[in-house]
Length: 121
Image (cartoon, rainbow, N blue to C red; front, side, top):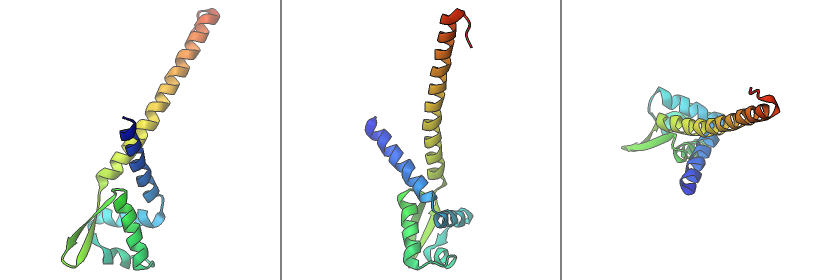
C-alpha cells in the first residue's frame, strides 16, 4: 500500500504543479473548448513554439492532456477525468485526515469532561 499511496501522491503533485502555471491553465481552458492542434495552441500565445511544447509536455506528463497524430499535425485533447481524479484524491486524503483528527479531539474532550464531573461536550 505504501508504494501505491506514494504513486498516487506523486500523480496528484504533478497535476497541481502543472495547473499552478498560468500559461498551462490557459492551455487547459482552450482544450476545454475542444481539441486543438499544437499550431493552433501556439498561435494563441506570444511564446516560442519550444516553450509551448514544454508546457504541453508538462500537461501530458501530469495526465491532463493527451495527444494524437492526424497526418502531419499533433492534436491535443483535455483529459477532464485526470483533473477530477486528482482533485478527488487530494480532497479525500486531506478531508479524511481532518475528519479523523476532529473526531479524536471530540472524543478526548468528551472523556476529559466525563472525568471532571460527568459532563461531556
